[in-house]
Length: 99
Image (cartoon, rainbow, N blue to C red):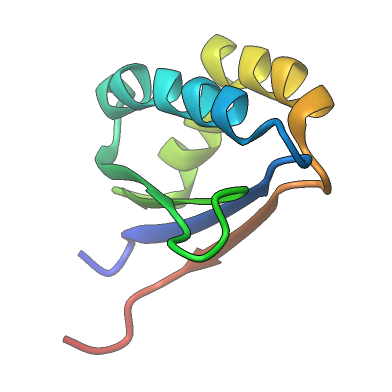
């Protein structure tokens, strides 16, 4: 399936907000995994910097990823996360080029 899209979404918490951001990010997992087109949706936390989080996501295609990005739970997350983030999130889309 060459249309698959992999996403790395990076979030950096304000100092002292890492636990609150972590809980907010964790709250996205179950609902997002149920979104149409979601193949994988995994959250990671940096070992040497507890304020840094990364979602590694895999979607069937870019259109379904766009639908996910427009869902109510993602809109609510964005609204709540603004006060917890040290910088804007970084979202990078990838397509697999080797096995």
